[in-house]
Image (cartoon, rainbow, N blue to C red; front, side):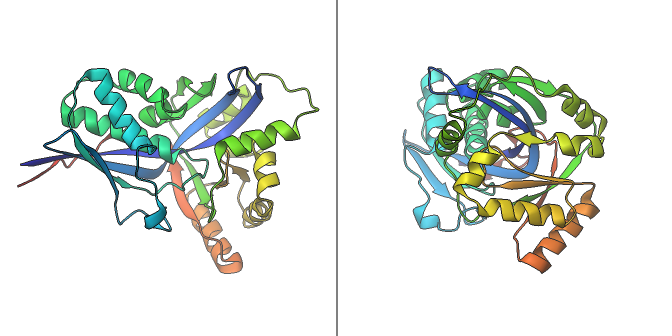
Length: 313
């Protein structure tokens, strides 16, 4: 019998993202409000008879324009996640990992982190290594600051380098229109540009997310929320890709309550009032500007096993 476990983890948007000056370790302290949204990465893990870790890309991967160029080697986060789990638990089994990528690559939405979170959950179940979610999150944090959030999902304030998470219990849904770009932006490159743009400015270390913004999100008050959405990385992303400013303006002209870059970009997130309003924005952007869009909502749960566990002879 071939045993396969499939896990799913969400992408995220940053409703709020303040960035401090460079730290001695090369990182930046941030104050972020993460929102997990309904655009998912799936990772299937199939047991092997040997100890090899092999990776493939599922043909349903809508985020990959050129499957031949997609890296499936040891630098892929799914490989690193599986190897880390083996080393941590001493369970040296092999696995075939198949990724279904839907979150824009290098798009500021944490797609790679979602892959890592899904891999940890899938392999933990496949191998019976018995780690709980907190233990998997601590492992994942070694791979990137966004992995713990992909593990937990929902909404959370993130401090430190984004890995010090304080969950928010949101009872109201928010609807968004995503505008993915046809290219990616390297996160280190965007941070580097931000540092250059702010070289002569006094930059302080952020200590909290704007309480007014948190309150507006908890209350579901979109009119109060919209002007408080903010991302320090926007200016750097626009410096590297000026066309993002044009698309942002088109989104707001189409009726979005606010348009901002998610994370380090270049994905744009447009806040809508409800699903119907999101559909109107999508129609206008498509018909009048030919802009490709995706409709999502949040918050959604973090990484988890999909209901069907497949057994094939």
